[in-house]
Image (cartoon, rainbow, N blue to C red; front, side):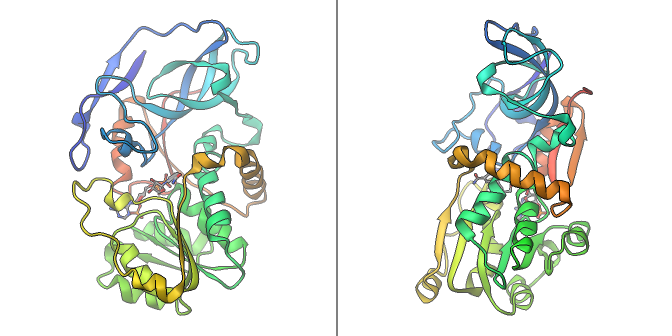
Amino acid sequence: TRQWHLASRPVGEPTEENFELVTVDRPEPEANEVLVKTLYQSVDPYMRGRMRDAESYAEPWDVGEPMKASVVGEVVESNAAEYDEGDIVTGDLLWAEHAVADAGELQRVDPDHGPISTALGVLGMPGVTGYWGLNDVCDPKPGDTVFVSAAAGAVGSVVGQLAKLSGARVVGTAGSEAKIDWLTDELGFDAAINYKETDDLSSAVKEACPNGVDCYFDNVGGPITDAVWPRLNVDARVAVCGQIALYNETEVPTGPRKLTKLIETRATVEGLLVSDYQQRWGQALQRLSQFVQSGDIQYRENVVEGFENAPDAFLGLFEGENIGKQVVKVADG
Ligand code: NDP
């Protein structure tokens, strides 16, 4: 069976050289463990942080060791009373075709509730991030303007649609015309800006948000934040969820800018971390799953075929190759 190991730590943009495909013996489950065959593996922007040897909220991966990922898989051998062969489960396992897991590390996925891969996206960690990040930190009210960056991604697409459901005016940024069309034609965004094709981002944000910005859900940072910040309204809420524009920078280009705007607006800026929501994880999933069933929340997945292409799928996140959640299809169930 095969695993992807961290071959070396990237400096700046990661490349394929940083990954090594390794063939190992299929692991054997011990007491209370199961052997999981990976069907879908997630690749996520936060993994860039784990490739770095620096203290952060997620521990660094070791060079020469397998990397970790959220996985949806099938139990193929079980020494645990809770699971039978054939059960579909999800958990934080490895970039691997097979992995053993303690029964307590896994959650069951019900294939009757929809495509099992959604447990990595809209009905998984990114969905929960969008749900609590928006509701807890931004708390949008009808008529508010909510601005979300990386709006056509896994988290952003959930945030924008939930904000619409709360009666807000919703504006997003994304990096291709296909994404802009999805946001405005299908997801109900009031406006969307293709930041890669816009010379004057500040004017574009001003035009798209004539009443200013009450909630800014920031997935990206960098120049988009510079353009949104001056449009913040009095008592605006800013949820700092991600800063993907900066993840590959070796030196952060500037410190936070335009902080006088916070004095003028008394805005609140709050960082959010999805792992703080363990207790309310199920509540978010239940609500999201109702919205998906009713069609109030739509989702897309960008499925990269083949375990050998997992590093490519990861690198593609930084090129904006994904519309919706980026997942790797490793095997058929
Ligand atoms: P996405 O599905 O949004 O994929 C990443 C997207 O980011 C790309 O598709 C691309 O879209 C955009 N992007 C990549 N590089 C840049 C750049 N240099 N400038 C602007 N946009 C860029 O990923 P997720 O939904 O999984 O994550 C979104 C953000 O949320 C990330 O920053 C991630 O780290 C963060 N996050 C934080 C969590 C938390 O607990 N705080 C939990 C989960 C995610 P395009 O350029 O086309 O817009």
